[in-house]
Amino acid sequence: MKKLLSRIYVALIFIFLYAPIVVLIVFSFNDSATKSRTVWSGFTFKWYVQMFEDRMLLDALKNTLIIALVAAIFATVLGTAAAIGISNMKKWRKRLVMNVTNFPMVNPEIVTGVSLMLLFVFVANAFDWELGMLSIILAHITFCLPYVILSVLPKLRQMDANLYEAAQDLGCPPAKAFVKVVLPEIMPGIITGMIMAFTLSIDDFIISYFTSGTTQTLPIFIYSMTRKRISPEINALSTLLFVIILLLLLVVNIRQSREKKLERKLQREGEA
Image (cartoon, rainbow, N blue to C red; front, side, top):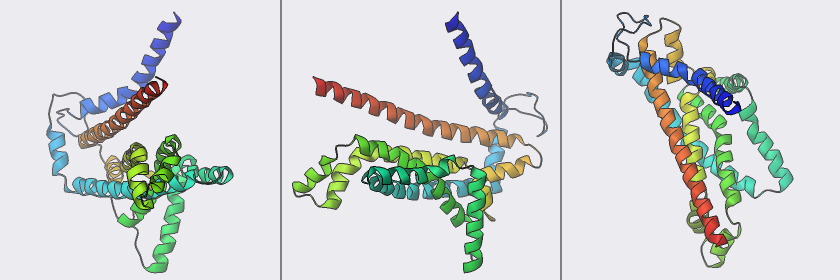
């Protein structure tokens, strides 16, 4: 009886969480006579076609992809360097730096967005600069950094600290020893952190809204569409975003499962 109730409980949770997404996906293919109708009228791809014919939407999509890619690359490079530095700190310094690093993750996004907006407005007034693509990229790098650091740090803990020194003792220069020894060991964490940063950047609305200036990203464009008349193009666009994010999450989960299997295999071989 307990197992049956637990299964029913889990099923209800999944239905509550994913039923709205299923409805969204289904109605993205709805051949409605008017844009505001939510009654099923037949299957069609016309909203996807109209979505890709919308010039403003495509510009917003291009801005979003550029911002996400640039922010993910810079956040990954800076986050990896920061993780290496943090891993070599003493315990009390490491604890202090990690508390500061984790603060953007627990801080409400609206507080982060407003504070970054005030900072960028102050800089803009001082240096005759306008908020736009650069301000959004800097804001996205700021809130993506902690996720990259938290993805790379566990890989540094798992790595044998003596490998880097051993490579140098065998005549390998420091830079080459890092590339040949340390980087391959922490690469799974770097890739995971970069995918997470890219995903978070695509999905962000609140911080982008406060720091965007005249630049429109995809979430801001969707918000502006919902303020007027709800169009099924939003359903199609949201479906594509959901599929892209789902694929990225699947890649991360598959990589993590493979890494765990490899670690277990190495442990068994070591015990044998």
